[in-house]
Length: 455
Image (cartoon, rainbow, N blue to C red):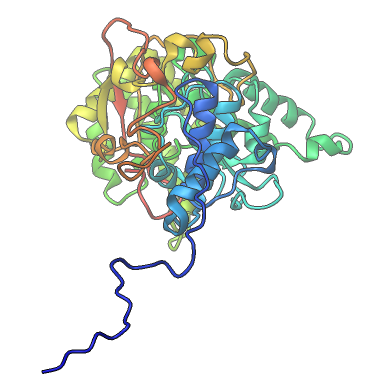
């Protein structure tokens, strides 16, 4: 047999059709400090598919560096933009600029989605998604206590108009603004700047919102003042006086309130306090019956809030508050929680109520202790100083810690420049809460504006 060698070329390895493009070098994250937190914020913008504000896209800016690194890492795998993610990033960016501690382990987009509401609890106007040019109706996350780190328990979603009005005010000052505005009602034309702020009822609701997270001895809130606003979802009430008002109001939010009213009355040992209690609940019941039969949860909530402005309800509450006192209100809250009178209610101690608030450091971020950021004013009202302990109504369920306590800065293993899992801007001050004598606190589920429960 004759064999012929053919001139065929043998390919020992595959050859690329086109030269591979040069990979852009990926910037690594700073180790720690002010720039490191800005880099992580940019990374989270890329992970959620949201571009940072134009003020933070200059070359060399840490937010831009993190955003570009995140875009290279996530690419088409970025999450779809959501309202909760926008609010969360907006809050985190604001805390970074003002040197405020941010608990990235508990404050997540999932938590923001749970506290989000369709209508502002202060102005009662529909909230707009924070997209495009800012408007007074934009939804923002408002930290209610400037002396604490931004953590779960004192965050509420309100309108930008309400958040701007709350800057630098505590509950007593906001209540004084409400009375001043009510005294000028109907007297001459309203100035243009006043027309853009709040009216007297909205000021009262804002004052009540600020009083919820302030201990009774520090809030300056009168014990006989009416409750103008029910606690928003997952806001812990450190003041037992409005906490008891909220608990009594919530008895009418579900069927079977007659039986629950009797159970609360059995917890009152004094005959005078029991008589004042029944008189108050009779007045509230009359206002509850004035609601339409087809009223939804949001409308019923507003009816119950407005019931406290009635002179009869206000006068009977003052009689009950005088008979109980602050200590009596706290005792009644504790007993109601332990007996299971209010669904979803649980009693917390001081450390659990203000966990991760870092009140001992004034809510400042770890890098500010080293002088890396100035002492810019915090865009939030509230009390100044560490907490002493009080009755706390918390709208979070017991399982929220396991569900929400997950770091949001997740990256695939081996990805260069990715933030470490569980990394928080709070640093070593995450659990540095002020220790106080052992007292107790209440945590309760409060119905949100809508059909969904706060728990």
